Length: 201
Image 1: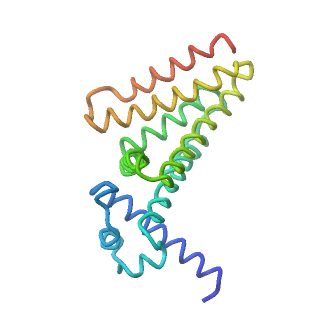
Image 2: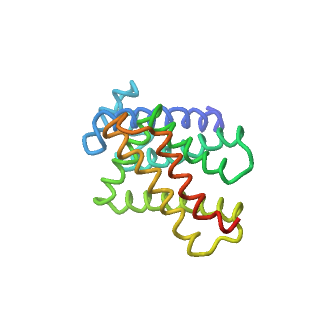
């Protein structure tokens, strides 16, 4: 087979396996997930699955990276339809989180489960920490762009608080759906951040 076609085929199959792994994690959690369950979900032989991912750990790292990639994809989609303002930039992060919570829950369930698993393994812990660092840096870069006079202390801690607000929605809402108005929750979080930078604008 042509090397380029083979690479394309491998990417398609890997994507199918990762999607099946996300569905399996949603049903069984990471600790309850087994390679044969993922193979069943992907409708393929377990031996074929091992051709693409030698171990469960390898596959879980690919899943965690896919969660990150999907977050970026959604934000890019939202960005195309928004204005070039700080408030609109914040809405991109909020819109992505709402998409996960309301329509693509398997990504949020996986992320929560990875947080639990990160206590048990260095590779998971490092990858998850890297993901959160990138998330905070994205928000920090956004603040630098729209609020260039913002102090270094604010640049350090506002992203931390904003990420906590986003993740807090996942933990609370998915545990007890409908217990609060998700739109109002996010609007309040955005208002708090905007109030903190108002004097620098």
